[in-house]
Length: 397
Length: 239
Image 1 (tube, rainbow over the protein chains, first blue to last red):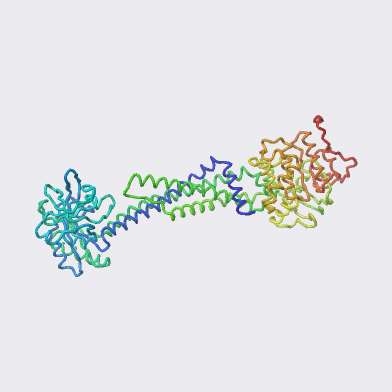
Image 2: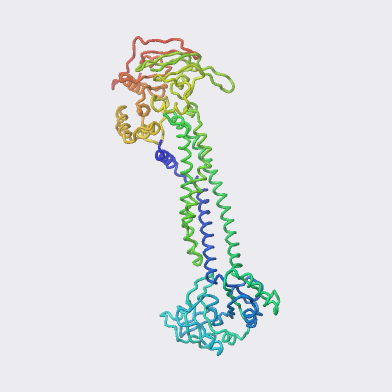
């Protein structure tokens, strides 16, 4: 008996009981959906982390005010001053680029167009070097802009698009906090980091920012080191240097490694949750298949007896029922793929920042798992069928 | 040729030893038509199961076509069944969800019959039993007699030399029963060895020889003097 003939016999049996077959596959369906989403989410999360690392630069850490895990807009009063940045620059043993910023939210206006909630970032000329974030048109801030506290600005891509739909922003004057700023450059797009649009930002000289926002405090001190390996040592030094003048709880030194940990712990929770759903439902699904196969074998006792009388050998019967179980669970796996695909479309629609893409690897793994479940739980019923005594089986009613 | 010598079959039934056959010897020539009779419990079903290679004897020898099958492995017995033996059951044993055609096709997968010849062979057999117009019908769309014809066509699929019939007309009215007997007689004329179990003297007289069993031994081996012939007249009333 060829494999094709076995498959045909199993398919006929599955099709003969459409409703029962479909319900039987339900557990495996949910299990494989969970597997696919699980893997796709962790792959998606690691993509996000990679993007984050790339966005910040892998050789970057920062000194932030306060202790919390606040984002770029931490509201607590900052005790960080330019003097800290200068001392880090002077005193570390590494060749670092220290780039302090002062961030504030403000509306930016040009003519009738206005964009609210823009991050106005007071920065130094070395910012592009420190953050590997450069202008694509025009220039970034120059040393003389800082010295003279000029009112010039480099626009993030989102701001530029909002205020200058036709793209001719260079040389125009935008209004920030009631003052006119000349546009000298447009920055390359950095996209989104989780829910923050990095391009919804403009850069003005730090000195100008301190004047218009009336503060000498800094929001962050970015420190770029030559090699990613230098980060731990350089961070320790920075911590010691800043700690000489302000209390340890009044600032923190963070690398993207910590952000990475947060993301990983979130994706770990997801993985554990979906993993247990996947495991439990595959188990339940497998038991369901075993149950229905035992019923099916009992129902078809006479058929088994007949097939044996017609010359079926024990392996023939074993394979017939085993492939029926595998077919059921494989169908469950296929339904799961469909369901996961629908799920990913829904998730992607609901949250545009988290594009969930189904990976081929996940689909393959889910199908392999579903077949494995069918095989494992199908063996016992199939073995029972194969071992039946043909005489007893033919007499069964 | 079927040759049975000192055949013994004992089995355990709820702890009690049942001696179904107690030293039976019998020879059936190729192309013969014999009937096996006896009251229930006489061992006729056991004999038929052994002849059909569905079971193995406790002792004694059973030769089918010159081969001793009494100590063959289950796998070899299955191969033998698929090639040399055709079963006809009292309750037909058709697959309910399959068409007449699919039921006749069933034995081919186990005998490894050449796949390109299966379809024509199945259609030819259905025509042989007179069901060329019922090929796509399911068993529940067929009368009892027609169902038994499908079962006979199925038994003939691999062209076995021996046909084992267990009360083949037991579930049929007398008219359909006679039609089935006529079909069996025709197969016998065409060279098949027929071994039929029945409790009906009347049906047994269609055979050339009647083997009477009682308590697991043969008590009489009777040659039928005046054989009945199943001749069905279209206007005949059921007896």
